[in-house]
Length: 254
Image 1: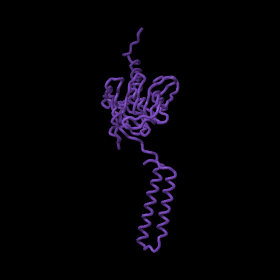
Image 2: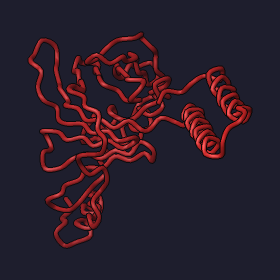
Image 3: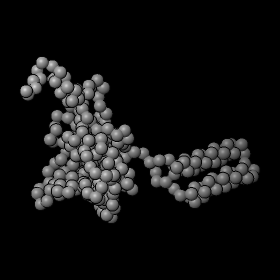
Image 4: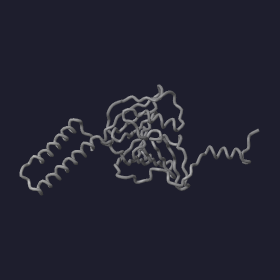
């Protein structure tokens, strides 16, 4: 339900009070009619209060799924994977890493790659730029989240991030806000953010690669798991390298 303004809330409250007072003043009512009237008045007040509170209740987190499409220049568009978003959590499936999927939690923030067949997961780091771009953002200042995810991945950029608003646009019939994202004086990419989803629906890199969310469908509930399955162990390649270096297998060059 969309929020309602203070004037509308005041009018509804005054109407509810008037309804209750009118029932109280009706003369020569028998006992049964008075009971029915009282219940109707309470029901009316209940509905009005729900409407009033609904105007103050935050909107539910958006849940949607979409296909990811990649295109560069005049080349034909190709599939870049599948996207699922539930509030602050994002699941990305890509054809390049078909044996697993990425899980992003923008609230923490965190980004992992999960491999179900091996029952392991690992830090996503820089394995895919999608984990840095396709994250929940503030529609008025998306660079804060983009910078946080870039730093989480270990990518080095000079200076704090800032976003320049380019204007309004539409993607797939949805209104979006176009931004240019800068790190220091260097433009990193352009992003088109849906203010209702609070999520970028398109990213364009400096070399002309465009990734777009298409065939967007709202969901009532997630159709895929949005968390690391219980019992999966974390795989850390650096730990394995350190263990190999400490073993007899590792041979240093003289």
